[in-house]
Image 1 (tube, helix red, strand yellow):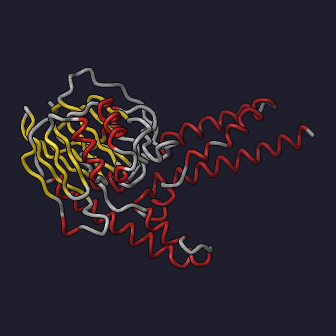
Image 2 (tube, rainbow, N blue to C red; image 1 turned 180 degrees about the vertical axis):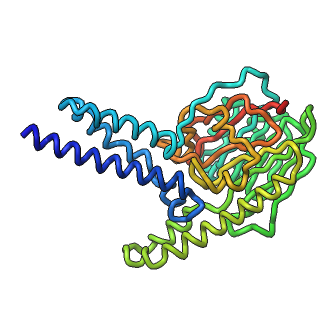
Image 3 (cartoon, rainbow, N blue to C red; image 1 turned 90 degrees about the vertical axis):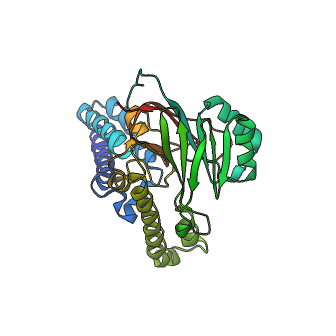
Length: 330
């Protein structure tokens, strides 16, 4: 009996290790440069680690220590390279200002809920994506002394004057333009800020499974997801070109609609630093709000030093907000 249990445990552990290895290899070596892997990265990948909670105690109970060690190593590799775990410490240097970016999902929760979260984080510049009248009013309520503007599906509240603004209307779809550009006049000079929200994957998921049935899903999935992916890549490519040419000090923040360890973003924004990679600890997940497993929202910068970064609370939207304290790079 004990021998059979040992063989079964080893087989189950081997299968689990292979699943973790294959998933991690796909993300690391293929990544979201290919739309099927991009879709894989949007699934609840932390669930792949759940079998370890059952396997490890039983392996330890029957003293299969080498297999316990194999599981531990595989989980550590998975956490870092598949799930995007990061460990960093805040920079002791003084921040210049705090920026917040938030997909507010068209203001479903109302003015008061947004205002409470905004006051808790206390940013100097706040960006809203997928905004509407109620969400925009939350900025006015939370920051009565700020410069507050709304442009297409984006809102901004800034302690500093806003001297320029615009959107690429030529890239706009039914959901609006994929990004907006603002220039804020800080005490250290002008800073170009891009608020980001390219096309989401939700439309492709909805269209694929709208009428049910796996046969139809297999027929239409490739075209829908490939078109969706190409459009998002083109939108982010246009943003990357414009941000690269925008000057020496640029921030790009918002809902990028790509998962954590994105090779697509790395290829487009090679000169930019990611606030979470530089100063974040944990996984930095922002979506879905109650039990997040995706880091869709992020803040990238060029010409700055990130001092600290974080993720906001669990109210007012289906996304959690992200924020970062930034200082001028030496």
